[in-house]
Amino acid sequence: MSLEESNMLFPLEYVEECGLYHFIEVPLHFFKRIITEDAYGNDLFPAWFVPILNKSPKLQEEFEDLANTILKKSTLKRKKIYLVFLNNNRITRLCENKTFQLRTLEDDLQDVAASSKRLFSRLYGTTLQGSMVENELGESIHEHYRKFRNANVSQACPFCGLENYPDRINNTRSQYDHYLNIAKYYFSAVNFKNLVPMCNACNEAPNKHMKDLLFDAQNGNLRRRVFYPYSDCSGAKVTLTNVMPSGVGDGGEWSVDVKPSNNAEKEQVEAWKKIFNIERRYASRVAEEAENWIVEFIYQATLPNKDDDTDSWRDAFKAWAKTLSNINEYKVVRNGILKKAFFEYLLNDAPDPEVAGIKAMAQSEMFTARQLAVV
Image (spheres, rainbow, N blue to C red):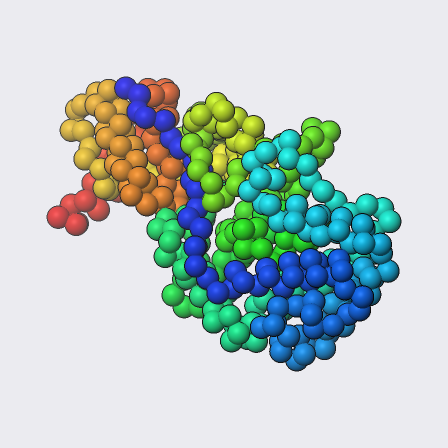
């Protein structure tokens, strides 16, 4: 009576056209031109950015501070800074190829690192999202978010499947996560290849927050492969087990096993589970929502007749799981795939007394009275 396996994780569609993407030209131009320049000046910036800079004293001050710090270095050191900048902006390759070397600034360039961190924090937090950049490049970050949501039909956050992205209509938006965290990978702070809308729960501690995706802190800080959100992936299989079956309304105590749909993606799936605390969050969500999902099933599914046996109820679970699968193939919804895994558990692994408890619940006076009232 098995069904096709549940899948979590799904790739996002990258918005191909957006005026804000030109913003990366600012640091790119700066680090490339400063290799051969002798002094700080407007030649270090794209022409369109100079008026913005001239109206932003604090930003001008921080660019000038960084420039003067770099200008004290040799041409060779300046080239190395530029190469680190380029390397840290190859987001897809860094995520997907753990043999691709991550370049960092050497010890004698830590003054450049400190000044760069301050500058890029301002570039992202104030400048990129400000009205002057919007006016110059023709789009705001809210407009980019609307494009992102229109390109991605599913409402659910792909990193967990448990929460929805916020409304794209009323000028609200999800947080933009720096997929490679801004504290370490500050050079990619304004690169939209590294800016990914993510639900608040995934983006906060103890989940992803400021974790370094490229290195496994629980395993000797070894370099690892991780999913890149805008690349294809096969997903992951979710299997639930109620290790302490109890009354229908008590939630139970759940064990969650998540494995790759494609074994070639095992390393990425294991990283995803650790980074986002997937199995712990899934177990908690099932315990919290199981009774609600059963009630929804009782009201909306086609139920067996009063005298039908346990196998008939398992057939009903199978049909309902298929319905949930069809919904999620069209558009992944909040809790959708986890809910499907729950009914697959009822189909394949739930002990007969647990199934009998759901049958008794469906035939209780409370549900019978409500059904009669609806009729």
